[in-house]
Image 1 (cartoon, one colour):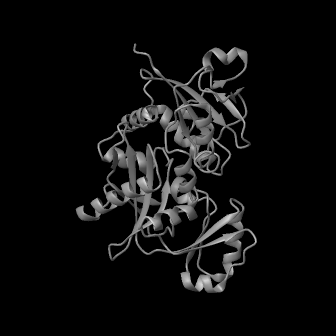
Image 2 (tube, rainbow, N blue to C red):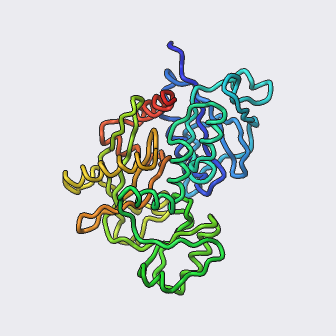
Image 3 (spheres, rainbow, N blue to C red):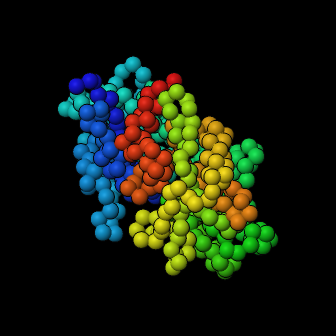
Length: 356
């Protein structure tokens, strides 16, 4: 057997998206070919403790309505910066197994995982990793700065207002945006902490909910249009390509794409490819690649758009570590584009190892 790649799959984390990370990790682990990879699984608890786990992909799934998570059982892990010595180690009994990894796949969503923090730590430790670097991760995680950068690059984003803790909600701003509005943490994902607000009387409660997850909140005008997503993949030679786009269609009794609609309820239908016509498919793919470059991404990203009745593309958000769960759109779009899940993982790892 050829020498296998030693890959560390990091999952869980301190963010509110902890269970989604666990679900994603289960799918990634199931797709890793044992003939190609020697897998080390590293879980991060909600409190931030790192533990070596013996993760079974079959256990990292939703059980009924119960979401999985990382618990503190297992060997504690310490990370040591340095490029020439072991970067990952634990107590002496596990040291022989943990002395090196070739690459890390940080299957982490949200704060302390998708926001440039773990990317910076891995850079300091000299460990290759899957996904965009510090700058792109931080900018894409912050929805305000994503809008600022993309507007500067000539891309259209929806109207919005930003609030920081203690700022008043101005009636004039809401009048400008119109109702309904979406209130969301500026640095969050998976629709956690997001509210759709139809009445000014409900706005304060929605802002308070968002502030539970972040000190900065966006109030966004509702956009009337079709919800379209597109995956971007960068190969080891630097080539950037876009998948076939997908359309998310909510069922008639579902009001918006909430956390429950995404993960717990049978509330959505998906069209891959989206039935938008060849010209619009090319426009979406081109815009997704432009956004990838504008944010200095590498490896992968998923770009979410609205397509209006007039054919205008409006960028909703960018995810630099999109979901990898069995129902996640990023791997589904690439599968429909001719890249099955195991090959997608292989290409992401190859790109990580090739990056200087």
